[in-house]
Image (cartoon, rainbow, N blue to C red; front, side, top):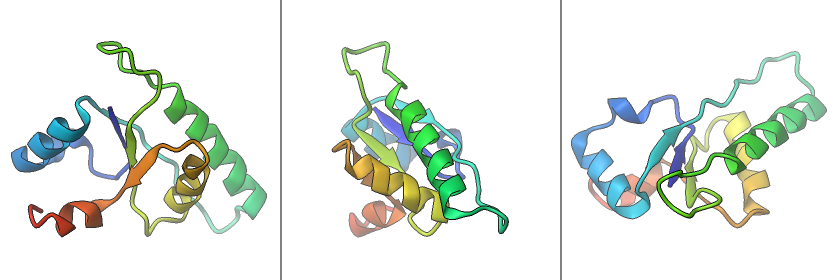
Length: 107
């Protein structure tokens, strides 16, 4: 299962991208990460990132026996996504971004 945290819901992806992701990860689930505003301090950002990682970890694929996602699709250039990625590193869940698809030459 892939958790899509990008600004582009998977329903808007091309057929080629859906096929590629589907072959690799199976089910795709959208999860929107909140943005960061200029009034937030690091502690606020950390708290929100931790809360979202907990939510991501509890999304299960009811059609399989998986208890956590295989990967999370993030936009590495966004601050909240960077923070979530750092927390996910501790869970050993793979994170991918658009560059991973561009490297394959398909997108």
